[in-house]
Structures are given as structure tokens and as C-alpha cells.
Image 1 (cartoon, rainbow, N blue to C red):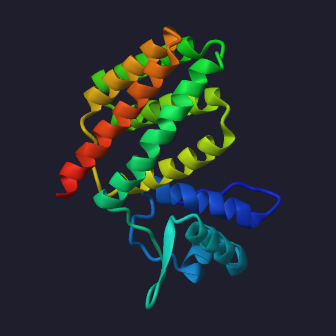
Image 2: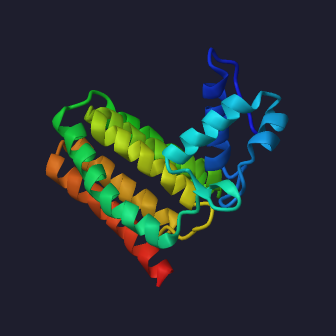
Length: 215
């Protein structure tokens, strides 16, 4: 089901609803984004739906095809590996800046996320594991205060979420938690260079796993 919330501009609400439906897999990669069908489903006029679909295309979450019109984008393992090339640099930068800027309470916040992540792993709750994984990285980004890096990483994360719909190998859930624990330890030590190196190593390991999958 696609959920939309009341808003001043119905097009904004439709866009947010469609975007989340795409990222959560409610609308699968390769699915046609039919403006008439979506307008009927959402009980809105075609104009806001048309605008929302255009924004999805602009954001790279949908593509225009010759005969089918707009469809949800498909991110391949090769493309994900390329995204991770960029992500490894940016995640390293925000980890270093988060330590250098001495965000109060960051180490405790990361430890709380790690505890929730550990509990989700033990419960084999994949959805909660993914949420904790994203929350950990978001906490570091926000603590960095680097608006451009945050914006770029948010966009990359959207593509990663979309790519997860067709690519399921990410180097193992347990190793990812261990990587996060090592990054958090560097933050608590206030070692900016170590935090940057460990954050980059974490993403490089995931990238290498993707490359192995694509061979």
C-alpha cells in the first residue's frame, strides 16, 4: 500500500509516498509508474502524480523508457559497487569530522545503536538490523555537520536501499556490526584518523563483496 499524508501541496505528499513505496519495495524495481493508475489508486488528480513521477526520475529512482514510460530504476551489483567507491570516501570524511568536532554524547549514542543492532541480530530481525545499520551511519553524518557530504550520502543511501531489492549480498550481517563497533571505539577514543580509516575500511569491505557478487 502507498501511504500519502495531508500536506499544503498534494504533489509533495504524493512524491513522499511514492518515494517510500519505491525504497521499501512496495513498488518493485522495473515496475511501471502509470500516472492514470497511480492517480486512481491514490484518489488524486493526475497532475500531482505526474509531478511526483518526474521528481523520482530527476532523483534517479525512476527512468523513462521508450515504450513503457516511467519505470522504477534497477540498481545492479556493478552500479552499487561504483556507488560504494564514492561512499567509502564520504563516510570516512564524516567519521573524521564527527570526532574532530567533538559532538557531545556521540559515543554514547553510537553505543546505544550498537546495543539495539546486537539485539536485532540475535533476534534475526532483518528489518531492525537494516534500520540500526542506517541509524548508525546517520548519527555520524549528522555529528559531522558537513551539509554537502550529508546530502550526497543521503542520496547514495537511497540508491543502496533500492539496490537491496535485487542484490542481497553485503558481506554478512555480523561483520557489519563488528565494523560499526570498531568505528564507535575510535570515536570514543577521540581518534579522528582511526575513525576515518575504520569507516572507509567498512565500506571497502562491502564494496568488495559486491564486486565478488558481480563477477
